[in-house]
Amino acid sequence: MNLYSTCKLTIAVLLILFPVVAAIAAPDDANARRDIQHRINISGRQRMLSQRIAKAACFAALDSKNSEHIQEIREAHALFMSSMQSLKDGSAEIKLAAERDADILTIMDTANDLSQNYSTAILNFVDAFFLGKFSEHLENIYETNLPVMTAANDAVELLESKHDDGHLIRRGLANAINESGRQRMLSQKMSKELCMIASGFKLQEIRAHMLGTVALFVSSHEKLNAGLAQLKLNEKDASAIERQLSIIDRNWKELREVFIRISEGSSPTLEEIKMVASFNRTFLIELNRAVEMYEQIDTSGN
Image 1: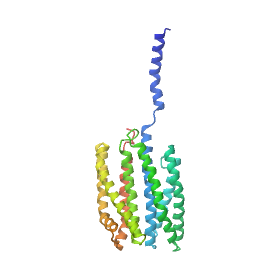
Image 2 (image 1 turned 45 degrees about the horizontal axis):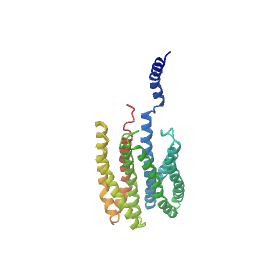
Image 3 (image 1 turned 90 degrees about the vertical axis):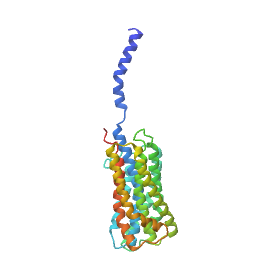
Image 4 (image 1 turned 180 degrees about the vertical axis):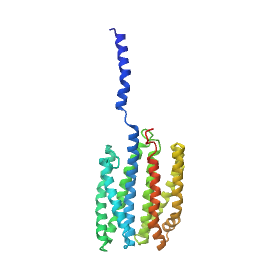
């Protein structure tokens, strides 16, 4: 066989084999999208849970006869700790692969270390609550919740930065999942801050925090509305998310004036404290629906 014939044969063999090799090497794009988008959602949820726990502890202290707040703490704490483990090691139950990125694992280790101290404060508070000797443990929760939230936020921000270029998931979608997920956290953080003000805890400092929390919630909501068109979704998905953002806007109007007034220096009335303690849960449900709608974009594999 001459050189020309040999080259023709080699090329023919490569053309036959290449699709097979490519098929073996190519990742399952739908599964990759599902894992990334779900991971950003769950990572962002950790921020919210850190604030939901602290919020519920504050409202429990204000209304010690209401055991619903303690149940909320227990459920949120259990989910927070199990999700921390699942994000690192993977979980078939919540459909997450193990994390392999060294940069993210480093941040997660920091978050995990901080969370252990937070968990101790939470469990001590719950154990002491019905004995009426929980004030020291409540202050420990106040001291440890923000570092935990910051570490969790660092993790999800890094996730977004690694996946917002349009390479594996739709360009801008990682930001939308992160941004909408942060809204969940802000709803709980501002409710916590209102409660802390109502209890007289570090009024000037907490009001300054609350003013920033409210402003960030407002600007983030506006950003999500403005950025929807930039995602270039199909009409069905875009319309569904637009409707959900409108529902969130209506819910926010129920709370906005109270939060703004308290952050600017007023004291909450008993009626306002009760309304926020109850309604922030309904608000959280609607905010979470928006995150899940963003998460489901492009994950059908079609």
